[in-house]
Length: 218
Image (tube, rainbow, N blue to C red):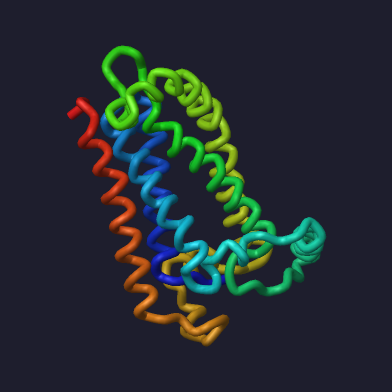
């Protein structure tokens, strides 16, 4: 498995902000939770765009596989003979899509959230009438999706252990270095595209964080 620099930066940044959002939310640090949540939103916007214009292994086409291919991969893993995939394998791709769906739902509902006391999300300023109507629904879904985050993170960590112990694959090391690209695996990586990708990531996160300036919480 190999990934380009923008994808790897997204991966580790997203891990940090999800952990930060969870800890701050559980401990009532509203302002910190908002900043982590908006950072996650910006990162997910980047990843959505990069899934169409990024390098080969970053594209959604490398994540989505038919049920038949997924089952064949599961069978091969149990026999310790999985086929090699340059990017995410079929099972890993499915887990990534699930994680994106849940965290994406939380990131989208977060700006509409309110505690009815001290905090209103930035959408209260952008669309006050819609905020009044939609905020209670957004808050409920935000809490419901929150319950799915820990199981999905646990599944992600389990996959890392399976690759490390069962399949003898250095999954974490590859996500840090991306060294397999140096061995000419997959389509050539364009340094220019990578630079644009990093710039796009920064712009998306900065744009999402700027929403915090619209709220009266700072």
